[in-house]
Each structure stands twice: as structure tokens, then as C-alpha cells.
Image (tube, rainbow, N blue to C red; front, top):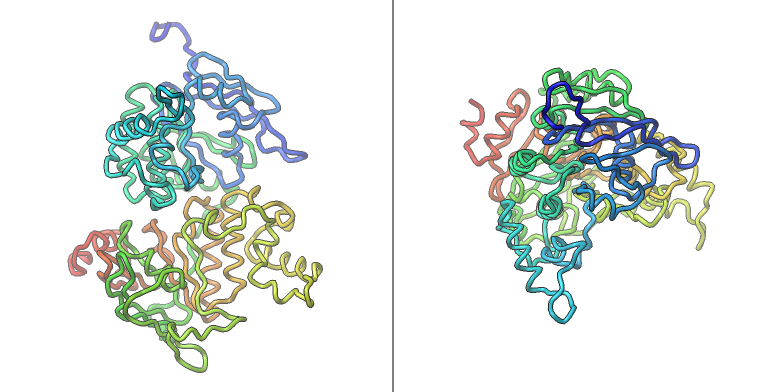
Length: 513
């Protein structure tokens, strides 16, 4: 019996010797871990380490070759999603799965759509239930009648999490849940509520500060194997990173440019206005410079980046680009077909950057396809040679080129987006949260590529939700608040405290205290 002295108790969640092969590749090999009731268990590993496969096994989407899983003493019938749901397992995914043409109310009702007296789906019942769920979990600001496609990325993630929380799970799996959230404290409060009721939580995150804050215990995966475990009081971040990536984590960020170095002007933005939030922004970018933008969600940064990329129209101001031989404004539309002025790595790779039904090689080389074309045909040998060289540049294996891009890990998908952007050779590389939801090793690769690209003589403008990333990577950082630039910081002024204070709307003098 639970709680009786001298009687060994079984863990609330038991995962024993789970293995899964895809062809000759071992995605999981003898993976075992135990989780107690009310425990938050961290699951760490690079993209491709086996975390996603393990979660698919738990959810019933993938049948393992061997192994067993039990929740609250009841063994799961693996390979059957309905069995996992009946056992009390729910998941909130990082890669948002909801179709855009359904409402928030429908999303929160799935998979059990309520029906009225006629036997048809009842919009009234769904809407009422959705309002109750949103109120219960602190999201009453969301409209149940809104289409999922009309929500910003953060609110789509809120809906996914509320959907999982509202099913009263015994085991809740959260996959990179704060990657798109401007206020992770909201999620922390909800986790405290459900764990207080006895729910166990598997928390997958690349943010070690979150793991330290939330997790009682944790497991590290690498190449499908369990390579280590940790407890909250014995967590050493450097050791965990070394376990995840299999090598020492000596220097995450490449060296910055010397502060005193003169920077040739490349880009000047003056009094730029774009609806609904950008309200007269001034900033500059020099050659060989990495410039960051820091701000809370919804302060105009998205409009700024997407306007520069030509995806959002602006209603005032101008953008001047100092090309090698002349100067012209962005509005004159003087673009080079061979070398564009701006290329954007967007916020959401799957919906905004990748052709998910196509292959990796196609996704990587599409921006340069004219170079391989001969009349109406594409010279495949030239394309393949170029793709292999590009894959090497972004630290991808040649084998990945022959896979559908949908089959790649999130980190490798982001490398494809990044690689294609670099191959376009823009004068200004515009990065909107480019390391969202990728592992430590991929982040290091991206940091290196950013610095290498800038050092070659062009400029990089980057927005990131991770303040330490801006501190470690950028030569200068602008903070944006309420649609305007709040402060410009450089050199030793760029600290986490200064950026956060300024992003909250405080004056620069305060932020430097």
C-alpha cells in the first residue's frame, strides 16, 4: 500500500527498456526512466537524440520494438493513441499541430466534439466549454471564436497547453513549451497546480535555467541512449551540456568585433512606421556587425523585421541601404536578382520557411536553382554537388540531403532554413528568433555561422527571445518598447539586467544602474 513503511512502492510512471529502430538506425536503445506522482522530470538531449521518438511511443503514435510503459500501475497498450489517452497521458507539442481553419473552441474540444440533440456538433456547447477552460487556466483574454490561424505564435502555444491541461492528465508531456511564450511564469503557475494534484510531468526543454527551476529529477539522452541523470540539487549545467553534445562546451559564442573598430554604414532605418505596432523606429547596421533587437512580445519587433523583408507594408519612414557602389532606398525596389538586399529567417520554420512535402536538397538549394538550370531542365549533378557543399557549410551530414525535410530533427530543419538564407548572400541577414527550440550544439553552429557571415563584410540583424543570446552574440543591441526604440547599448553596456530593464520600458539611465 502507498505510504506503508517497509513496502517498496512502484513509480507512478515507469518506462522500461524501450527500443525502436527505423531501418538500421537505432532511434531508442534500452531507454528506462521512472517518475513519481507530482514530479516534474526533465528530459534533455540534442535534436535527434531520441526525445521525440520516445514521446511518440508514449502517445501511441509509434510502436516500439520492445519495452513497456506503465502509468499508475496500468501497463499501456503501446502503439494505440486511444489507449494512451484513456490511461491519462496528454501532450502539448512545440511544433504546433492544430490546423489553422478551426476555432479555439473546436481545438479545445478535440478529440471529443460535443453534440446537441440533433446529433450534430454543437457550437454553443463547445464555446461554453472553451470559455470555462480558458478562464480556469488564466487565458480568459483569448476569444473562443478566433481562428487558430489568426492567433500569434504565443497564443497558439497557449491554446495547445490549455488543451493538454484541461484533460486532467495523470502524465503531462510538455515539449519546449516556453519556446514561443513571452511570459513563462504563466506556465510555471499551471505546472504547480497540476503537480499539486498528483500529475506527473515530463518537461522537455533546451533552456537549462527552466530545468533547474522546475525539475526534481531528469534524464539525458544522446543518440537514443540514456547517458546520464541528475537531481535538482546536483545539477551542473556544463556537465549536462557535455553529456548532451558529447564534447566540452568551452565557448558558446564566437568572439565579438573589437569595440573601437570603425564600422562602415550598411543600413539606416529612419522613422519607420508599420501597422499595427511599429511607431517610428530609427536604427542602423554597419558592415561586419551583428546588431540585436530585444523586446517583450508584441512591441513592434515582428513588424520591423517583416517590413525589412518586404512581407509587411509600412506607412511612413524610409530604409536606406548603402550598397558597394551606391546608396538607394528600399522603396526604390532596386534589387539584384543574384544578391538580394534582405533575406529573412522567419519566426516559424514549418509554416513560413520550409516546403514540408519536399526533400531536404530542394529546400536547401531552391534560392539558387537558376544556377543549375539549363533551358527548362535542372542539372541534377550540379545541384547535388552544390547541396553537398552547402550541407558541409551548415554542419549537416550528406545523408540528410536524401531525406524529406519533414523527417529531419528541428535543429537540422533550422539549419536548412539558415543554410538557404546564407546561400542567397543577402547584404542584410535578418534573423527572427533563429534558435527557438533548437539544441545546444545546433545553437553553437548557428552562432558561428552568424559571426562568420558578418565578418565577411555584410550585416546581421537579430531578434531573440533569449536575452543571454543577445548579450553573448551582438556588437550592439537596441531595445524596443511600444513600437519605438527605447535604448541603444554597446560594449560593456550589454548586460541581461540592462536589456531587461530597458525592454520593460524603463529609461536607459535606469537600465545602466
